[in-house]
Image (cartoon, rainbow over all chains, first blue to last red; front, side, top):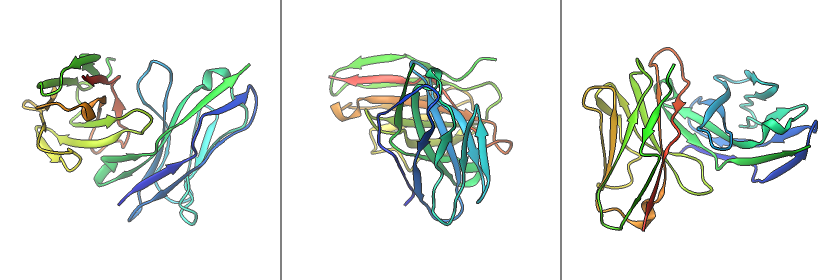
Amino acid sequence: GNSVTQMEGPVTLSEEAFLTINCTYTATGYPSLFWYVQYPGEGLQLLLKATKADDKGSNKGFEATYRKETTSFHLEKGSVQVSDSAVYFCALGSGAGSYQLTFGKGTKLSVIP
Amino acid sequence: GAGVSQTPSNKVTEKGKYVELRCDPISGHTALYWYRQSLGQGPEFLIYFQGTGAADDSGLPNDRFFAVRPEGSVSTLKIQRTERGDSAVYLCASKISGVSETQYFGPGTRLLVL
């Protein structure tokens, strides 16, 4: 079946540090890949997505590239801010229109001034 | 515009009781999803509605769980004979079918079974 494995947290970084959160997946076919973010006290929000191999998703300074050869979709940001403190979930979408999302366990990021 | 709303935000019940959790999707969104998120885990898919019908209910853990969407808008997740292991946050999401793959999530209902 489909599965997503992401880097365990928590991760604590100083402001302006470089961020990488690793995500690898197992799936049949060619799933779409997503990063969702959950800020404290808020619901899950889509951060970025990629729908095919070599696509790069980007938003709010975050980037992730769909690497089929390594089955990975690592999240990166060059300079994190305190406001980026949140839980980040990697997910893959299967089925028509990616209706069924399979999530990783989430990685909690804390950014300190 | 208004996002996905879920009620109640918190529900405490006793083992063996029946509960209903409600989801109001974004207006015009024909697809609706339920997920369950246990502590320290990512959300797990439960069921997907396209319009009024359940297109995929393969994630429902057992026959104590049931969901309906009679008019193709509001959905209710029903749990019979609740067990302590049912304690989790139940998330609802909706999206416009055929246009985007983006699911929009509600804030969730936190269910605690004592």
